[in-house]
Length: 320
Image (cartoon, rainbow, N blue to C red; front, side, top):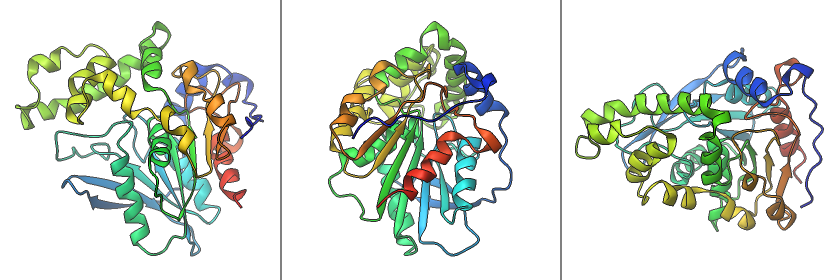
């Protein structure tokens, strides 16, 4: 599919990657979204908390929202999309990944960029309600990689799944990790690592046979975290094996569901491989939009409705 020419024009003050990224993550507020929490039990006895928000009228459409690293369903980029879709007669369910709903998960494992088995469980649960004929998925950052991997790695997808929107997708995880570890992103990397280590601390006492204090103290960077914890907890042979197997890039040629990727050219988290031009040109179901601005999960726009949220709604409304 030809590359989509983006029409995004940010306010003059939001053109830098840093400004759009930080403002959107720390300063934006989204009011008027009433969420109802539902807990589902996963096949391995762990749980996921889902935060639902509904339209005022009965609908057969729902969007599943997937957050980014150390996010939750309460983040403004999740609630902003939920609010816009609710106002357009589409229910929304915000997924809190394992350990991200304010309560530690039960197992040593947690969540990661390629944990599509949890997304599958959510989709099947949503469909089991017998209400929805049209299901869409919107993933942000880590959640974007997960969504694209899900639709690219599987042969038999639910017929109700009609579209995927992936925003600020780190399609090539090794490249994205390298960018995060670069000097320009040092402040982001420090913040992410602090959150991840704080969440890992309780598992030292809960699962002493799985991780030692010495191993925990050896974690100095994000790649260390993935070497010491993420890879071992989720069945990978080290961080590089995790990045290789969990990256969605390799699965993009197989996508058979209309899928829109919105990756800003000034996103400092994304490496060149995260802009899959060749894959989009050779797959009629894959749409790639590369706005000049937007930063990482930025895309600030008028009326507190962000550009990526409006484009997501347009994309599903244009489906045949």
